[in-house]
Image (cartoon, rainbow, N blue to C red):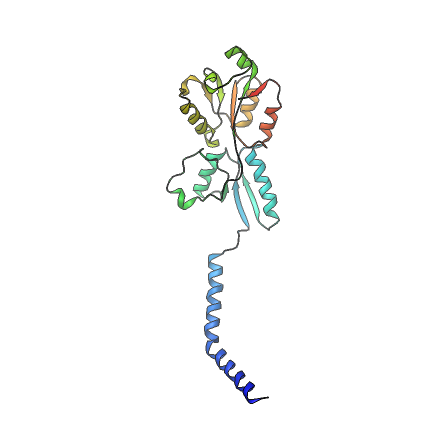
Length: 226
């Protein structure tokens, strides 16, 4: 073995001997930091969705199916809707949840506990009404604005859905006194049944167009969309 090559090997051996403990300590600290910080995605998450047959319910099922392919189990947690989901996030009972923009107050404390991952989809506010109600109350088969609903029986959903707050804002903007309408807060499914039976004149939903309830009402005879 050439003398120069042998000297190089001896130098490398001496170097490794001197920095070996330092490298071992560094690798150990990095391993401990990785274990402590746990940067890998969790294997199980709780997703707050919404009422049965709602868009949130449907999208929750899609997310559960998609994340399952990556080894993540999604437990779906049904709720009344947007406002209820925000409360579940605040309390730590849900890891993820669908929340409508403008449907609830997001305070300063939420900056620490709740983080928005982004806007997922457009969620219009739907107002369906019965043609026979318009004929009986407005002397015509259709209505054109919110003021035409004065005196009507209108269901705005449960407080947890976030819809009552949105609809209340619309009434305020249009300078309509809430007391001029007969407002109810039934859940989506019983409200739809009462609506189709003629017990309610109009129903209000905030949902994606893909919602089964929205699609059904769009195709129901005698039902119109404002």
